[in-house]
Each structure stands twice: as structure tokens, then as C-alpha cells.
Length: 243
Image (cartoon, rainbow, N blue to C red; front, side, top):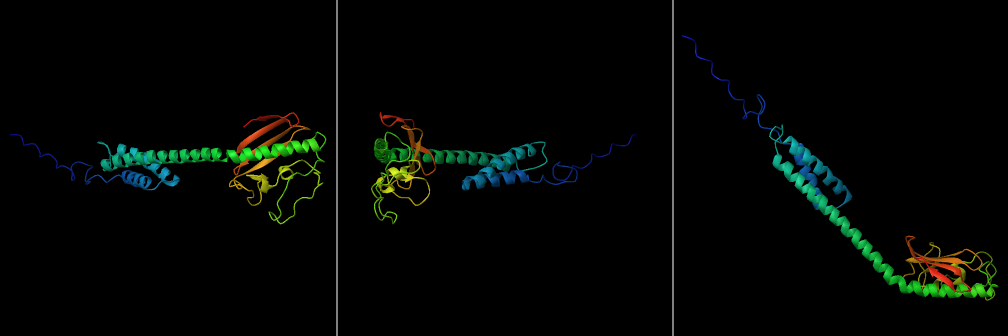
């Protein structure tokens, strides 16, 4: 009579994960993904934005390695890390969009509020420029009178004496003093001066292009053009606002 077959071998310890091995180790990527996502949700900044992106990538990788055939446990952590990281990225994008919107809105309000000051200065400067042109034998070149009327004490100097002439190119400072303007006069250096609330937020620039032509430009503190006037012929009043 044949011998009975041998008994089957015992099951591996731990339910079948690897011969002689215990439970699957938890995925480090899943844990790191969840941590990165939570950090991104709590603090909004560029560093945590990068952390959220890293958390999303790690979460996807952790989902793969914690699948049915994977060698790691912690699939719930991997899914949670992926979801939280995705939400953190969405929150960061929404926050940045809000900042961009508010900045743009503030700039639009500033441009609208400053228009009366620019209108005042433009009228004054064009009037002075025409007076200079008429007094200088129909020319915007050198040799005309200094028309600025500085108030004594603004910079410690006395007002310019009558009869002073411009030896070089005509500039804003020679046509109008800062104390006469709502915006700062010419140039971007020096302390904010002027009579209006926008004295420190912008300046004027004059570029003489010909005997009767010039460009008058107002810019903000960052150099962005607030208004630009093309003076084609100051004598005939041929003036066009280009920006």
C-alpha cells in the first residue's frame, strides 16, 4: 500500500507578504506627501507652494507603490496626501490670483485719483512752454527765460532773479518749480517735493525734439508712464495725448 502524501508546507508568517516577512512597511512617500500637503494648506508662500507640488508628486508615486501588488502599505495616507496637496496648490493659485487682482485694482484707483493732479500740471507746463517759445523768438532751444517761480525756503535758496536765461536744454525745473506742481518736477532723485498729495508718487520729463516740438511725459515712482503728450507745434497749439 502506497505511503500517504506529505502535508502541505505552512503559510508564511504575516499572511503571505514575502517569505519569512511580516506586514508591509508603510510608504515613506505617502507620509511625506501628507506632510507637504498640510504645510501647503497652513502657510501660503512660494516655498510651501513648491512643497505642495512635491507632495502631489510623492502622493501619486505612493498610490502606485501601495497598490494591490505593491510592496508598501499606507494607501490611505497616499490618497490623503495627494488630495491635500492638490487642495493646497489650488488654494495657492487662488491666493496669488487675489493678490494680482487687488494690485491691479489699486493701480487703477491710483491712476484715476491722480488724473486731476496730472491735468493741473499739464496745463501749467504747456502754458509755461508756450510762453518760453514766444519769449525765445519762436524757439524751444536754449536762450529763453527761466520761468520757474520757486518759493523761498523750499530748498533754502532764493527765487531765481528776473532776467535769468536757460543756457542748455529746456527742462521741467526751468519751467516750473516743484512747489508749483502737484507731482514732483523733473528727475527721480531727491526727496519728494511738491504742493499736492502725489508729490512723491511721480515726476515729469520734458524732451525737446525740435524748434517747436517736444514730448511731455508723466511717470509714476516705478517709471510707468501715467500720461504722455506729443507737442507737434507749440506755436500752433498742435498737441496730442498719446498715452
